[in-house]
Amino acid sequence: MEVDRRDPEGCGGHHAKREDSPKANDPEQVLQKTGKVVYILEKKHSRAAMGSLRLLTDRNSELFKKCAMFSPVDHRLPRAYVSLADCPPDFASRPEDYSSTLFICRIVDWREDSNFALGQLAQSLGQAGEIEPETEGILTEYGVDFSDFSPEVLQCLPQSLPWVIPLEELAKRRDLR
Image (cartoon, rainbow, N blue to C red; front, side):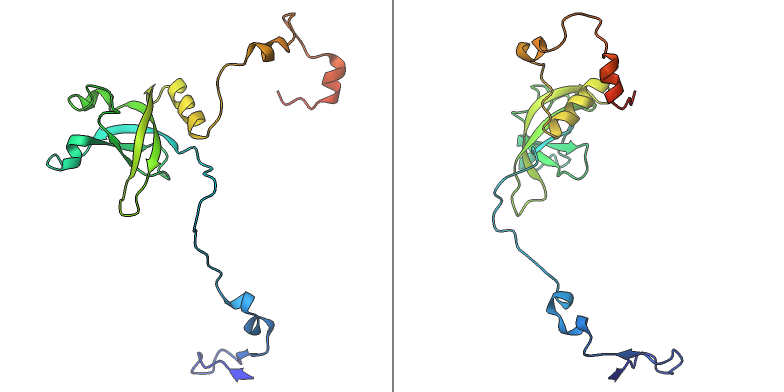
């Protein structure tokens, strides 16, 4: 048995550490498990982000003449350089016109030596703060298909309107309205 010497005055009572405890002898309990990503088999994230565009701040840099900065609404996603060729035609001359416009940007690449990803603008959604563009952006980010139903699916619905749920069906369900 070994005495804990961290209490120099001995006021804290007897602190004993047993060397034969299960934790001390079990490497699974002591060692920190680590790993290294060597290959990504499947990308789960849609790599699409909703956000806004702005010009780069350093007007003297080479990037200023070629790229704009995309800033996603979701701050967990990286900012991205976007080619000015992907931006609206008058964006470089009138960026203030697009300050409250939401865009969808797809992350194309993110080099190891860069703080920012490389992106490609996919579409312009509309004005920030409006419900339709915000909803479309969220659905696109999460890869939700929000296209119209096909005619085959619509034909499966009851054709006589107004349709109500039959009482025997209501009895089997839990009403959460």
